[in-house]
Length: 233
Image (cartoon, rainbow, N blue to C red):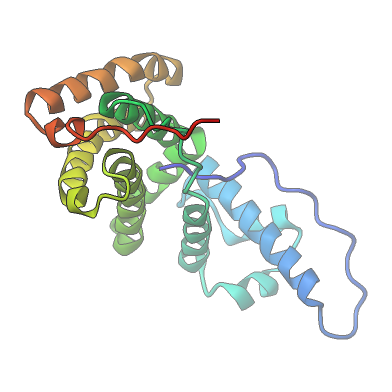
């Protein structure tokens, strides 16, 4: 799972709006963005328990009344942060040449997914969601399922493409691949393993998983399909 968020300080608040009249939709949207940017930075940096709504409004340059008019409490604010983060978790898939073998396609997609799953933002979001699992179990499950579903969809597309009759088999392979590669590496990142070492080990982990799937005969159905050749220039 990849999260497109920013751990840097949010942009400073613009000059205070003059009193009188209702705020414009543009101004309201800007306040929303500042609040969520500040909340994202604080939750991912300090964790759920160490972050307060007072800290969020101070960083966002907003009032407490403004925050509570949008979010009933810290739980609701955190939920909004997570939902916004997940909306940006569908990075562009790697380019897969039509003539690539199934192993090459699976390797390219696997490395891409692993790279996205190990970003600082993705690991930070997963960590804070795990710490709130008892408090907000549905939100924690949603984060886990969203990341898995996104990865499965990418692998299925690489293996089966538009061939609907192979979708079920491709989904089974994708689930096993994620359990063999993505989950263990992300768990290692969660406990603090060095990112550079994890990146260096990624090709080997992906290749070992592909070999294991091949030895189990799970790639045969896809390897038998002749790749579609690209049209002549």
